[in-house]
Image 1 (spheres, rainbow, N blue to C red):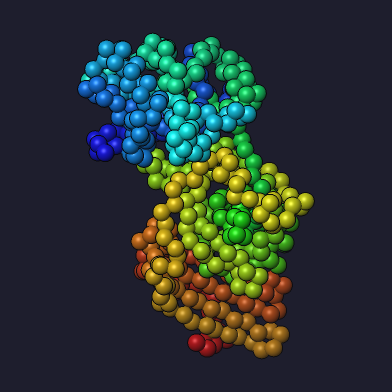
Image 2 (cartoon, rainbow, N blue to C red; image 1 turned 90 degrees about the vertical axis):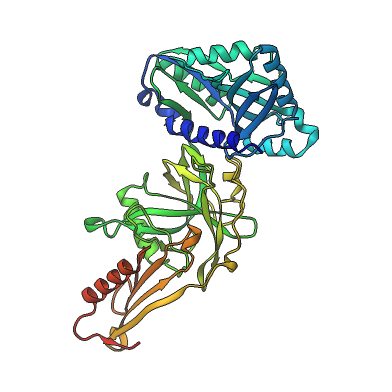
Length: 460
């Protein structure tokens, strides 16, 4: 393994990703800017940086992992480089597999082909970028010039080819190409280059059926309206993988209706997730199915690190129990499309395969949650007031998770329980998290000073 090559490949992914602007296909004409475009088809494979040095080829993925240089496509790449007369060159390419005769390439097919020597000849390289030639960075005023050079070098390739590219004069031409390549042929998306450094990645929306496992409320006049929904898909063993939260797409009327429904469906949970305000989701029974859409399903960040989801187990009496964090997906621009009362919370309706068919999860190297340290209670006080049907109870608990080193848990958690038999909504909860012990204890003290007034008695 060449550490220098590995670092170049990792840094290249970060640099390229930083220039992309994700655009929904249905809105491309209002989102992209420019007149002189070069459009390329987005291949669903694994990004590679190809190195040609001293008559030898090397290839590294965006994770910094080497790719077998004896693959037929790599051998052909070396042959083309020898014929070109170049002493040194570095290229960006997509490694993809053509093992599905009835559909487009899928990123999961690459791993399948790499693992089976009989499928190695189905692996191909689509070259889309030139980093440098003979020791000098390759500069181009427009992507047209870069793709012309790529076509010149790889015009004779069979398993190593220039990425499919098209010229477009204006947004309408880009829209026509999108409709042809994506809507009609089923390509993953298109990449649009223009006169500016911005690169547009245009993709269609995809929909997923998922179960609602939690919700948060709005503020002030919207305090009795649902703000965001927390959703999950199901594995064959019945475990639930929480993968997204969304509030866009819900009408105010529906938000009110959901609040009334979810208020009677709350359950306990040792899993804590918060919305963009850092307000914890109230967990509910996994009963309601919703259809959620998104433009992109991302499985790793720009550094090549896997996105993490949490696996949960639900029990009707005990609520949700965390199994472990696992590699998963993050959604771009999620929207709640509609409720699905025609579907039930079962694996065939909300299968995790809906996600894995769209994107390949990164390799899961996380250990079981059983191996993590146990949490430590730092503070616990319980107060009561009244008798019989007017009995009220408040409980304040602060604990240290001792799992903050994993990056998947906060360091400190504060949990407030407010129970009143005389109230229509008898049980209310609030959860706050922090990585500061001082801050979490301050939050707890503030809750007590506000809520524990005259007449309340401490019982523990």
